[in-house]
Length: 128
Image (cartoon, rainbow, N blue to C red; front, side):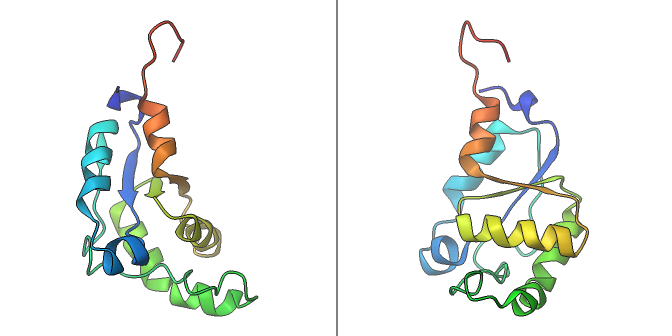
């Protein structure tokens, strides 16, 4: 792994099912801290972090106004980090944060955790 391949500031979205319901918050941070140069936590991090507003089937129900309003706090948390990349292990969070980025003009790239890992992966004999 070469964290220099991920030089941009990165923050992490804590998905409700994984973190608040499942209690899993440290493994994804462990990985991120090893595959990027500038990891910036949202405040508050982990379990007390806020929901992005995209869960509970709202993204599929045509309730765009409600999901954007519910994600206002999350948009501010992201903006406050100054990160250019938001990493999430959840596809619902990814879709919602992409919508939040467009609506609140955050200008962030939203990627899955595996994508950040793939960018840092060094395979001998292959060009970067």
